[in-house]
Image (tube, rainbow, N blue to C red; front, side, top):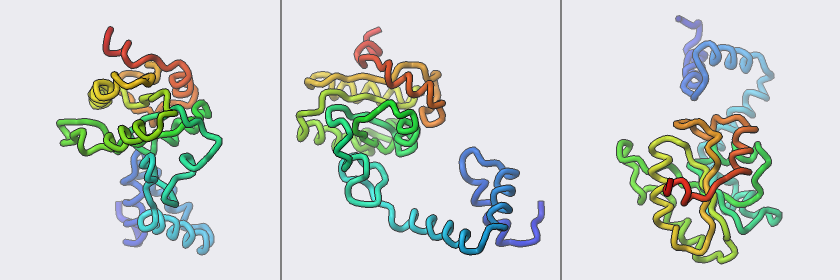
Length: 206
């Protein structure tokens, strides 16, 4: 399809490159944006620029952050004895929307995947071990990873690394279909999976 403006075409292509947004949806979003006030469009573009240039990563959990420490890690109302281990920031957003978890997080930054060339050393596993060593108040690690082969491989690796430590290791209940990412699970299913989490050892010993 030919558009009357190359600028319009480039912006549509950028929107269409995002997951879950097809060409028709991209066209609709860009045209809707086009008819907003110029100040709104400039604010939108400025926010995207800041996302690229000013975003930081929390020194504790590795989630994206405005400051050295993210809002969740600096919130004194959160529970210090539980850490939920996730693949990336999208999983934190999904879990927070359930309002069923009030502990802390740890972002691995990916999953172990020989096919994709992701080794344990490429993930934030060392810093997780450091957090456990430095914070004896941590009593439970909850693994909220995808239920595909990479997620299970990462589960098993971390279980072997942590099983002898004096903490409870658990994983979200398999209300999430096999092979699914928790990022796209509905809030009710994900929330129940967190509430009804199971000991990790039962997963590998069955």
